[in-house]
Length: 291
Image (cartoon, rainbow, N blue to C red; front, side):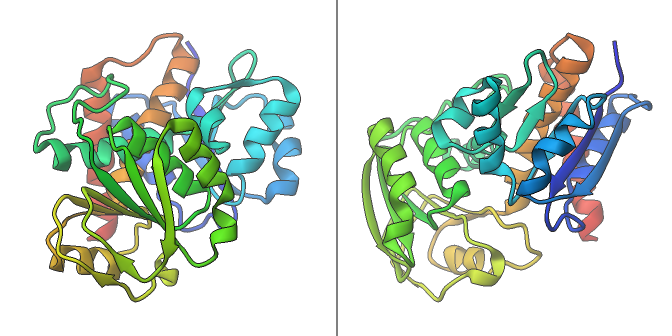
């Protein structure tokens, strides 16, 4: 059994809450020898950085590294989990033999939305898919890497129709190809109006939120950005949606990452009870930062 040694990588990285979340998990499980730091680097630095840190259990990756990690994994023959293979995006590197890359953002979105959509938080964290199923529609704002994660999450939630709202339709090709592979009925529109949907997800940076017109609706609205104030969620709430803050997704994807790191370090997967403890500790860490 080895202690978990991990870090979050990206640029910029000083704002990341990941160290606070993972350190809270270590404390909650009594893993005093766990270590979680941060390192600022760009895509051009990723391969050399990973090669020079073989002692680490794994890494969390944010922009601009998520797509480059999948490219590197393909070049080197690493194990690419289904979420990363499908989306072409990975936010997690685990130093298994061979290394594994995964996209826990998908699980984070599913788990953040499930309590609202199912009106219950009783689904076990070990369940890969939500218990909630419906033939319904979703609206996703943006067409970048996180939008592809949102598409796969919608598919796992049982959604069959998605409208992608973008500024530049030419940037939506990768998302459109993924939707086709998943069998989703996809339409692409301008960032101007949100039609009634079961799920509305903004994958845009907080500073890039456009002025939108909204039809009255119901369901859940998730803003993957975790700014203190979200104009998107305020508008969604005013039009009948239950707002889901980005910190909910942030915590849930971090719980999934922590499970991968702990399994790699100890050769034993955490129990559902341990993951519940980790999630509670991470949520508390977010609240402490906000207060």
